[in-house]
Length: 205
Image 1 (spheres, one colour):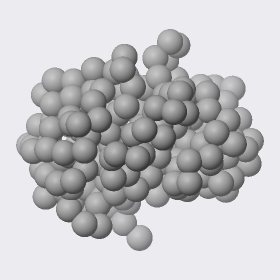
Image 2 (cartoon, one colour):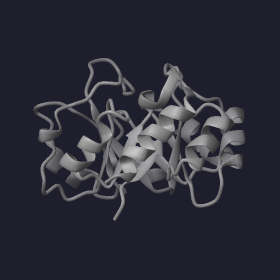
Image 3 (cartoon, one colour):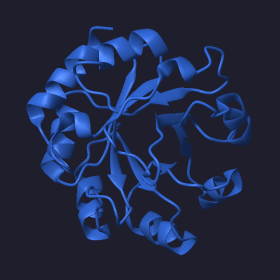
Image 4 (cartoon, one colour):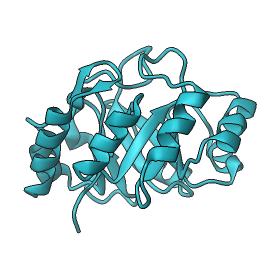
């Protein structure tokens, strides 16, 4: 089975369409004010409405107020929620939509326990731990920290780009990979050539 691809931090319709044109399975919209890739609801509505069928639109939240999450869900056509903060399993499951839980991995992270705690999630998204930053740092973590027998599908994130994604797929064998900064000209602005190069490296596996 081929590895799926999510291109996250989409802020423009043209970037979403470029991602889809090159074979992305999902796009990510960031609803987190401190992020340079943050989107406002009207912007997100336009992107989601113009994303073609059979491409998942994922909404990313970081310790968001429940009322804000519900407001986004009521207006933006999201297929999947992604929680990138300290949300509990109960909070993640409370919105009536499938979700994935991001785990910022460091040397003492117990991923087996995380998989048990978030058993209702569709997958664990494994990202790099950087103190004080929720994600999107562009840094790679030690993939050897991922147990080979983890009882949950893995979405691999953290510093992926066209130069290292093939190695990442060969080593980790994830269900999917997630890229943001690795396909950008500047934060939040994607580069069609970088997307094409990234996807080419995914497809060689």
